[in-house]
Image 1 (cartoon, rainbow, N blue to C red):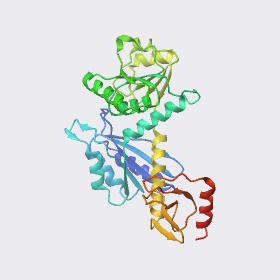
Image 2 (image 1 turned 60 degrees about the horizontal axis):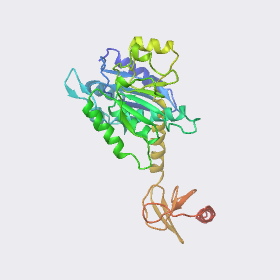
Image 3 (image 1 turned 180 degrees about the vertical axis):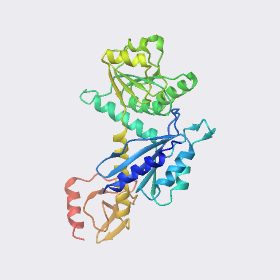
Image 4 (image 1 turned 120 degrees about the vertical axis):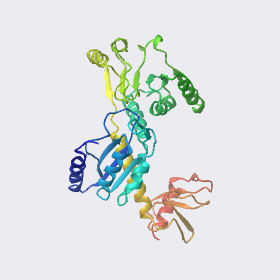
Length: 344
């Protein structure tokens, strides 16, 4: 472990202490091979939280830092995915278990780092093509590296109407992934996932996505064949060789390194809203005159009025149909109900 890890953490905690915002520490891991035991992001923040993301490559580092921050941050988020095997210790890196064993004072919540990455990439691409009337529909996309992230992202892109070509060194696994994606697609989806063959060329893609865990694939020869209108999104942070990226820059190809900060921000907002909703309500049902009120998010019988807070209702969302959904009720009727229950 780095000798100065204590001073790193102390500096972060000192910054957190000066803030009026809630503070948070993410414990994550990745399959990308690194020489370090861990690394920490810069301090990030949104309108409610200040936070740092730590990526760990062994259990010992996660344990030591968990002990240092316990009780000194408001919220600890830990990646639940088990995806790393420590080369030095020949052990599965189970960050979730280690953190839960050592965090006694701070509140713990879980997340999936790979899923946040997929959401960030999908959001980026949809926004990039937002002005295109078809969006991602009809686009030809190449995904280099079809592991956990590449496979999940490919499914999302095909669902959006893109024709996605996947590449992976292990052909047996690649064939299984492509078959699975095409099986679970919605019936209305005409686009498909397909296998990519380098001998058929790399010149006619609209988007190339790198999910190769730092293993370079595009060298100088391939970079010279990429369509000049193609955009490249590097998720694995290592899709090019040094000669390849130099040529791509010289050719003025648009290249992006995925920033997943928006996904972290959105997830924290989700946690904040969910905790606020749960903590705010002390009961889920209420009977008042001819109305039966039910808290939003609770499954109820037929005829309950769904409200934001059964003790002090301000908003009406609908009326339960008894099957887990809502009845079709016109706006005028809902306003009438809202007016009546506001007098309770």
